[in-house]
Length: 267
Image: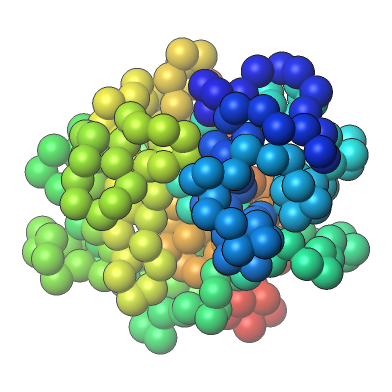
């Protein structure tokens, strides 16, 4: 998001870089490219229009910012934070924006994909660091403790239900690491029935709480939530919150547990 500067941009402004903001919000599911740009090609539209204003309000509401529809310094700062590459919304609607009004802020992925099996085999790619294996196995155990899933390791990588890989740059899924934000993110994943998690091997990872590294277990918990079918939560305390900070550690929060139990109809 290098195109964004901490200045106030609002409806009616025409400024270079607005088109990149539209692409960013479109990817994350806040803006509909076809229905919200008056049929103009997004790549040539640097006008801060009403659809963009509505999309920005939805973004600000999700991240508990002051809902103004104005691109201000706090909103820009939030957009610069490291994050999971998965979208926040999948309906891509900027019309009739509805905000959550219940105490629960969890979300499900489109179509509510779920595993039919309760015993899932998992495997790590050969390039996965040993410390990552230990941390992600703890993340599996934490999800198992609040569900009726049993996760078992297997050496048969291609036959595993869940596959974990640490990858660099372009790796064949159109979500390259190290590119423009948020494409690739710090990690991304593919829900059932694919069951694959990609971590950015170019980042510094740790399971020791280092302040200048991303916590493997915390990000692992988040991505495994997607693997099980959960979407992003707007609860900043939840593991399924999209943003992650260097050195930040989390465990499953009440909102995460409510979400997974609701998805799989568990008591």
